[in-house]
Length: 438
Image (cartoon, rainbow, N blue to C red; front, top):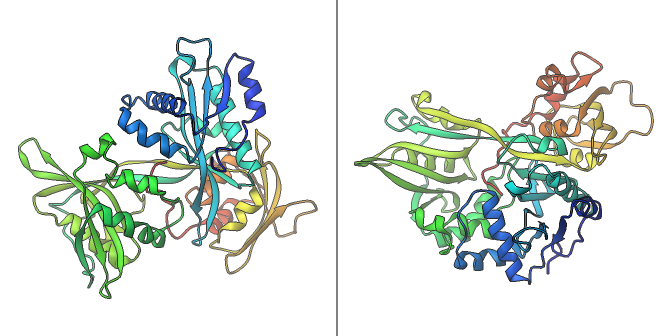
């Protein structure tokens, strides 16, 4: 049993659900039949196929590392199968300035269609937030399949992602030609070498890639049906000194008549600008390929500055990806660095009462911050801004705009330039990006 699985059930949410004849419980990781039923209910919640016995054997060991919650309706036709699921664990989030912040990751949030609109999500999400706060974690985070659910719980979209479609017949390479080399490597070797490269490449919005993630992403879990669907190829870039600085993982999808084909880029990670240029050039100049499909890329991808015709690089999707929920305002604000000095009085509203209050944020000329609850009068030069906790989460990594929030009536300020000054301070030179789901 891990530290996560030993956490008690949230009493308030347990009692709220019990009043409707529903039971909230924490999965015992040693109870394998219950783990398998939970996994099948999770798959059903996302409209995935039922999982095979072989795959269940792998997944039941993986979820044993996490806090896994289930809601049961014992009066139903299958009383032992959950009607709602959620899974959570602690993970580090990269913040502007390169530091990381321990954060409560929430995943696998499902409610069976038979039990919609019974307040189950309204019980489960606050339970997760109170659990995170009890652990002393300043933030919670999730990636979402629907954008309309989580704002009511104080989450705000904080990092965005783009899906790129690239016409390689037009995207002639005009960028740098690095002195290093690109070589094919095995997925097994990348499982060993990849994590170190990724850690050096992390920008705001990235989270830990756990060994579980690497195994599935590289097709090393034979029981995972996605491993059969992908014919993954892996390449690594070593710089002129022989140091591994980047890698790419891709597969080739043939057209109806064979060639030309499409290259599906599963991952491209670069710890240096040279690695970025070398790997993208390798991808774009692939023989017998006329299109590259690249999901989960930055909304401000530098690639467009490396090719002759930037219109050959199209964003077919741009959408919210990582959502943040601030629980401890001073700790969260102090953890990152900022782009401009300033003194701000932030009045934060929170319908759940977890983070509301008045706070003073002071940023010095070097971008270092101090933040604390405001118990006396604010300094005369403090800019006063009032906003919901969800919108502070949207601003936190530098992707959101205080000016836009003000125009939308979501942020109020005492001076006309307050929102612009807040944006200048919270700006991140690197667009926040999360390259994975969790």
